[in-house]
Length: 243
Image 1: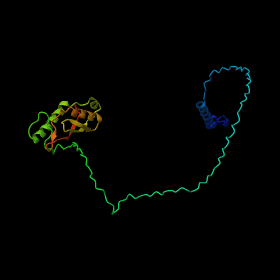
Image 2: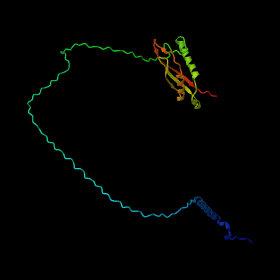
Image 3: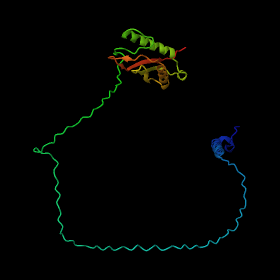
Image 4: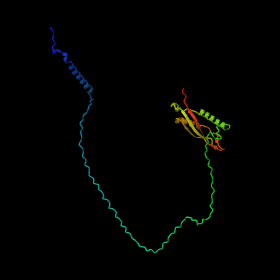
C-alpha cells in the first residue's frame, strides 16, 4: 500500500516566498535602525513675561523762530562824468637811439687791468695697482728692493691672516663656508681704508673685514717720487674641517 502525501501538507513549497519576505523585513529593520536619529532634549524653562504698561510722555512742542533773510544790499549807481580837455599842450616826442656799433663808430681806447689770480694746487688721489707700482707699500719689518718688498708684503699678509683668523661660531653652527674676496686700499699715508668684501654669507664677510682692519699702518707706495694709494685684494677661505 503506497502512502500518498497531501499537497497541502508540503511545508517547503512556499519557502522561497517566505525567505524573500523575511529578507525584505530584515533589510527594512536594518535601514530604519541605521537612519534613526535621536536628539538631546534640554530642559526648557518657560517663564511668564510680564510687561508693564508703557508710560506715555508728553513731548512739548517747541517752536523755532526762524529769522527772515536780510534784504539784499542796494547797488550803488556810478555815474561817469566826462570832462572835455582842449589839446593846447605840445608833447615832445622821445627819440630812441640805437646801441649797436657800426663800422664808422670809433671805440674809446682804455686800459683794462687784470687782477692777480691765486692758483691753488689741488692734490689728486692717485691710485696705482699693486702689480705695476714702482715701489710697493712697505709692511713693517720688510726690507730690500721692490721685488723683495713685494714678496715680503704678501708673506706678512698671510701671517697676519693666520694669526687673527677666527671662524665665526654662528657660521659653524649653520654649516656656512666658502671663499670671501676682500678689497682694500693702502692710501698715500699708509693707512688701510675702503675695506669691502664679497662672499657667500654676510657673517663671513664681516669676519674677513675685521681681520683686514687689524692690519698695521705701512709705509705708503710711491710712484714717480710721490706717495700714491695702492688697491689690493686677497681671498680668505672659510672651510670647516670634517671630523
